[in-house]
Image (cartoon, rainbow, N blue to C red; front, side, top):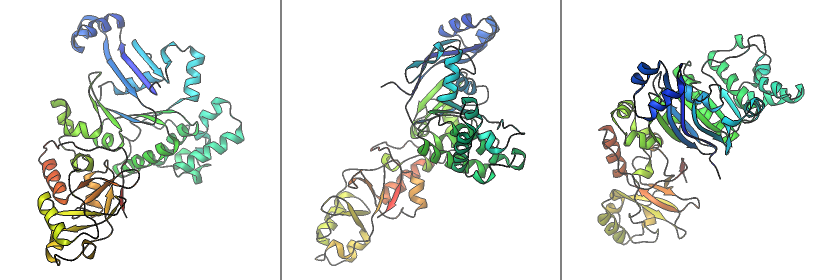
Length: 410
């Protein structure tokens, strides 16, 4: 099955000699030398990537890095100079005017940094604009527009005009306009950069929820690393038209490819990026509720842990016991007599910061599989050591990984 979006060797050159500029770029000349020889600027330089269905792929870079040009190449608002580009295996660069129009109407929607709302149209009419272009009946497009506005919390403002809305609300209308057409791919070019920090954070969280609801594949452009780390399934760091590094957020932060990427990540709160799966261990012993305290103490001592988890007969977590609880108990008593309920459970993609915020730093955490069984454990000492290493900007040792984030008390 092909990737949702793929490109291979994509170039975009602005200037009088695009073919010559591409030839020189392939020979390894830098942008300045190419411009000196051709008076042409290589804005996108040999980009290859695949974006999977329902992925949020973030392209991050400074102004002039080529990221906005790249995203506009995807729907051919800007025509690529060379290379290949496909959506669901369909050659986008081979589409004629009618095919390209259909692609934009039916499959790919775009949200811009500047809201681009029509001031003389109501909020609902703005949200329904793509449906109107598509030829949808007035009744149906009103229904779809109000539904999309409800998704972003603005259905009550359907008949207001944009001038009555704050900047954050106007950006929500722009997002609703894109969502109203049920796009398979959503292109977002720095959509939140004009918003104040609090509204921006709200919009980021809202986008994550909407992406789950609408199952869209998102290509998101930003110059803000924290935003990229919050949203991205994967992140591409772009410089001078090329990708310097592509990877998961944890990889970008913990293993920067070069000094350029390292400079971006230097001020990042690593506890929000590093995950339990990166520090979890599978070799720690688990206790049974009917086990004697004396046997539990021996297991604890051999493990070097500060606490141990207790499991039931189905290998599901019941609770936990600390070293202090075990040492203070009657050696002949049962583990269940001192066990604390419930156990703290999480999935491997849960960030270290999430555990801290939920008050779970003092107890062991059970990483559970889809059946709720314990697959690995994180000891309080593991968490402390990882946080100390993160704050010293040391690279954590990556161990177990999973795919879904979440923390549960149960």
